[in-house]
Amino acid sequence: MESHSLSSSLTIRAKSLTQPLPPRRSFNVQANPNKYLSVFPSPIMPVLTYSRRPLQIHRRNASFTRRRNSNSSWKFYARVVGGDSGRISDVTRELIVLNSALTLVLGVANRVLYKLALVPMKEYPFFLAQVTTFGYLAIYLSILYARYRAGIVTKEMVAYPKSRFLLIGLLEALGVVCGMYAGAVLPGPAIPILSQTFLVWQLTLSVFILGRTYSLNQIAGCLLVAAGVVLAVTSGSDSNQMLTGIAFVWPVLMVASSAFQAAASVIKEFVFIDAASRLKGKVLDIFVVNSFGSGFQALFVLLFLPFLSNLKGIPFSELPSFLKSGAGCFFNIGNTVSGCDGAPLLPLLYIFTNIAFNISILNLMKISSAVVSSLVVMSSVPLSMYLLSMPLPYLPEGSSLSPFFLLGSAVLLVGLILYNIPRTQTRDTEL
Image (cartoon, rainbow, N blue to C red; front, side, top):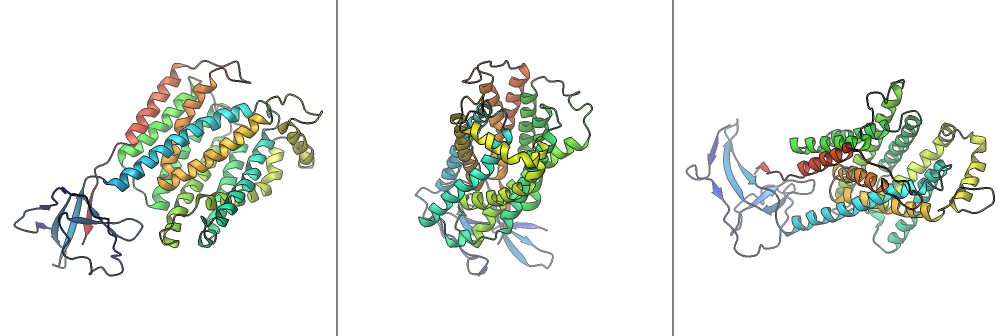
């Protein structure tokens, strides 16, 4: 294919705009492609760019060339040089940064409060897990109903196909089951290391499911973040011996747990993208996704409950009495429970923080991507470890951190910087 410029091999470039830009205009080029492919208005030459929504005309620095195809016909191409600019993209970038900071703070608080909540609930972590699963469903449905009555959630949003939410619920339930089975056998330091495969799964699945493309610096940044978390979490532990005597199936099961959860997160992102076209540009409310996804997850967890209770050493026939004792410790009432100091304050603080954390993750995923939200969540691991090493209420001992922790935190920071290095975008758009 040969290339010629429009006039005597001279490339036409847009001039700088010295006056405010007029409002951005959108055209549905797919409906009538010949209507808009004509002379562009001055003083700046817009460029047709493609997204999942109908084609839009954006004003950028651009050059136009003419190329000959194999059938000797001429077509025009617009080459865009540089990244997105303008007030709208700046607002979106600031919104992502603010939501990332909020998610990071909530992520650190969530991990610290979970550790504190297990102080009174140390004998009943299984009960706490069931409270979070089924309690969240009631809270999410209540919020969804209130937003529906207020007109924020529309009938079209509620009518979104439930098969996607069923798949999300199944994948998250399978992730919980596989993680609990593997976690009961694997040594403690091996669990967070194997869990870092979550980000690798997420990158891979987003390429195949969402059609995403990642630059080398983004892939390298994600791998560095995962490596930094591994270094920080292990903190010099003997990783060569931690899996000695462990059957191969258990690490594989933990990796499979990460794969299920990564697939669920990518499908959630797909739901937001798909809903935008189904709802004619409206954004699907996050509580629709949270409510129906949690509903199907609770359904599958209920079906798996006999297996989960036996896994925790609780015969299914004794489950009702165990739940009764767990409720007594959770609310710190009754004479049959002891060692539940700090309840119900600490468990309730954890539950409400975890709800806010989950909502923040989903909102960040909606405005950015599943990979960005995962990077923020992984960044909370070293920060929460640092806080948990300090003396805290109900955890006065504290602990010391090895140099590996500082090294891992530095590697993680380099990975985040590398992932967020702006890319110069060069795209050819056929006119």
